[in-house]
Amino acid sequence: MGKNLIERLNEGPVLCAEGYLFAMERRGYLQAGAFVPEVVLEHPEVLSQLHREFIRSGSDVIQAFTYYGHREKLRIIGKEHLLEPLQKNALQIAKNSKKEFKDLDLMVCGDIANTNVWDPNDKKTDLECQKMFEEQVSWAKEAGVDFIVAETITWLGEMKIALKAIKDAGLIAVCNFSIKRNEKTRDGYTPGDACKILEDSGADVVGINCFRGPKMTMKLLPEIREKVSCHVAALPVPYRTTEKDPGFLNQTDEGCDCIPGGNAFPVALDNLYCNRFEMAEFAKECANKKINFIGICCGAEPHHVREMAVALGRKPISYKYYPDMSKHYAHGTDPTLKKLNTEKAKTL
Image 1 (tube, rainbow, N blue to C red):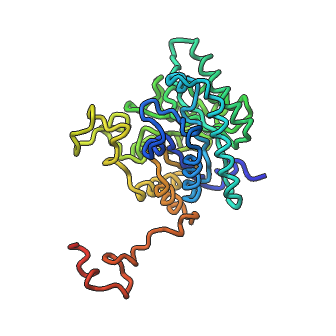
Image 2: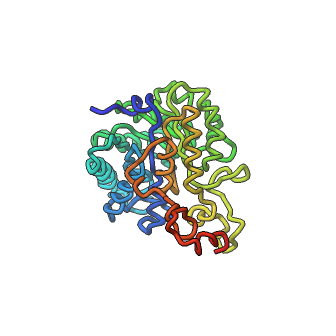
Image 3: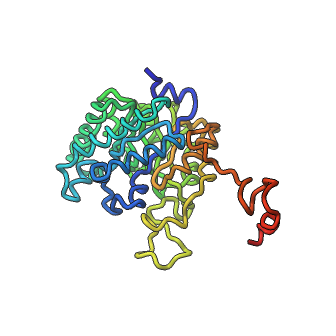
């Protein structure tokens, strides 16, 4: 038996690549808006390939693409009957990806997310959320996952229901809030206070994912690290969110006036994209601050993941193709290159 997630985190950073929704939308296998992961059933080979690319780039975790594959999301597109096969297929694809890389010490995790039905003023929604979380967790446990991530949840109340479902199943729980503009959960808790409550309720790892880019995510992490003794998670989106627009849900691109409605989210964020080196700096800063569950959310691509892995001192499989500009015809330094090109590189 390999070491579990907590044992791994005790030894140092664990890298987790996710962000499948955006990746599949960009590739033309998922519809923006409803954001339901039908690709799991319709084009499983595409999902397998993305798992493969993330693994080769250095991810320690294969996250089953069950995000937004829950009862409410499938209801809204009239395909609730596909819930169980979608969940089970996603979990099996993740497990198969692990088998493909037998020499790597990989972990498979299940995933549950914001239900979009919880209402603090309607107690009936407590039970509705509970049932949604419990059925997803049960399928993940049946598949033999190493742990469960509960993520992109904005209410402490809803997160507590998710945490209970995970812990009642006897599984390791990673609980990641998405924090919006006012730097609090929607029920008014600071990230640090909310995470401390979760730790006291049995969460094994607490932190932040999605919505915020690396700088705006890092802004909130010190309070969490100070208030909890458990491990902390940080998985930003790779977009340059700002103090003016700390989350990517309502970003504008001042360099473009042709975006329908003017909101760059979710399909016109290209000009706000972080490069690989920005994500590498985020990974290093996390490690220096003893934030060991490090990752990247919506917008992630393998080149981001690889650079984060390299920043953590690793050489993943795809490091074989790490850039070497010394051979470039214009910017290279190889002595066999023609000076006709290298001496004029800056003016080309």
